[in-house]
Length: 117
Image (cartoon, rainbow, N blue to C red; front, side, top):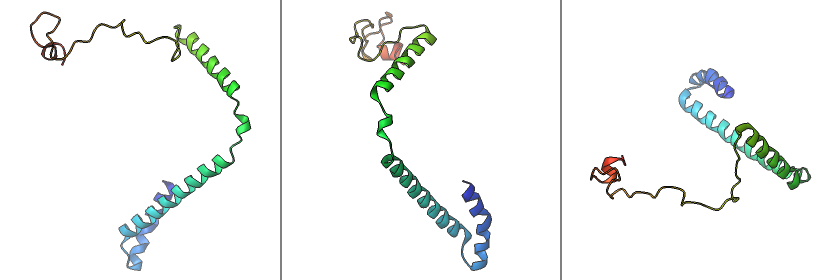
């Protein structure tokens, strides 16, 4: 962003060279954008290929995850269940009422006209 500000300050001089400043600004800003994207791609590939995989130990990550879960339980005061620990229990919820069924309040209207809005 700072480079674009510097470009904007100096682009007025292009008028002296018989070039349209707006078009020159657009062209140079796009060139700067392409250069930035190429630099980002280079950095990503560089970091991927220089990644030290010996630092990543699955056991250590599992211990850290368990500590975070314990800390979360202490902070909230609730028991946080992990995904897959309990079977799915849909039967605890009230049965869903269809939109075109009669409303359970006894008004005689369809659910979508009474409470479903």
